[in-house]
Amino acid sequence: MKASHVKVCVLRIEGTNCEEESYLAFKRLGTKPEKVHLKQLTGTDVTPEEKRSLADYQILVLPGGFSAGDYVRAGAIFAARMKSRLAKDLVEFVRAGKPVLGICNGFQILVETGLLPAMSGEMTEIPEAVLGTNDSARFECRPTLLRKVNRGSCVFTSRIPPEKISLIPSAHAEGKLMFPLDRSKQIVKELEDNDQIVFKYVDPEGNLSGYPWCPNGSTDNIAGICNREGNVFGLMPHPERVFFRFTHPDWTRSPDGPGDGRAVFESVLDYVTRKE
Amino acid sequence: MRFIFSQYGEPEMVVAEVRVELKKGVADPEGKNTLKALELLGFEGLKDVKTIKVFEIHLDGQSGEAEKRVDEMCRRLLANPVIHNYSIRIK
Image 1: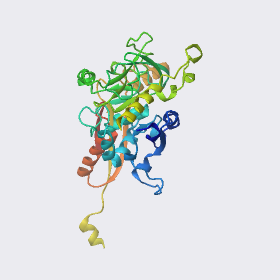
Image 2: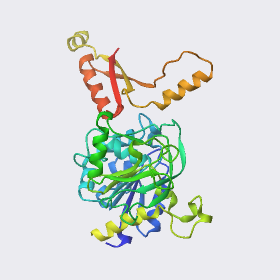
Image 3: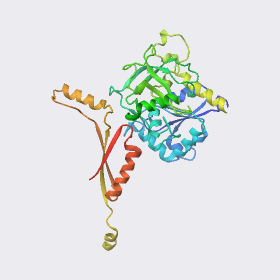
Image 4: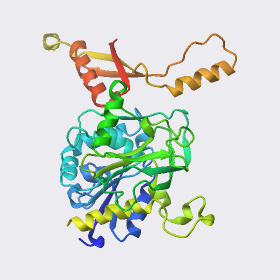
């Protein structure tokens, strides 16, 4: 499949605010992205021309923001609305091996929907994890360093060399990934065995360090995870904000080249173009 | 008309109060920060501050059946079982 035939659904509702950058990242790579409102997929309050079907897209992106004002819990309302009308379509999309990317609020939505970590089946009825309030109880907004720990399952990081440290900015107040406390260690072990952990927050030497290197107190410094098959990926930091080198904070002092986030989009495009 | 109404009963309205709180052992940074701020304001002898979310749900139905429905609401949206305990009180 040619890149120009790849249709990307950048899904939004009220309060989503990173759809433009996500859209432009895919546009720059020559694909056909489209900003789609959830109502266009569920077919509520839209004209026939505005109606869309999830099955027509090759990639689904849940961009960052504060969907539905982060009411109840971050991502919970978006997740409930998706689940109520789109559960079947979503499961079919994931089962077909099509990639789903959730950035920041999108990650929170994937976890609340049960699409991540999805340790039993494609989509669990009840969330198996949560992105809770940062240990600092503040909105943490700054560059963070991520080490790729995935051994090859995740289709969004194939272009990133193992152990490479990427600079990808974070901007969230609820990014602390947690599992049920009594089974947390065992779940992390299982995630490791399944190769579901993708990025960890590190210091410049690549060590797992505490605050401020880890902005939120996340379990085992985990910044991003994928499902067992590696086609559903969620992370708190924003790769779309460092698509170009000139949006890196140190760009005048570093060599030319693409931004660190670009590889995420290129990797998934590799996967989709090779697949069909 | 009166007869018909009394035969089927007036539609009942129930008010359910849902308390969603963090499980024991889950960090509550918001509570801790509030505690710190209260101490800075000069309040002494504070042991702990916890943040708890309360939803008041007005719904049709009898209290027993309403409680079951509210429980389902908690499971599907209001609480995340990973970190939350919830309790329901029918008022």
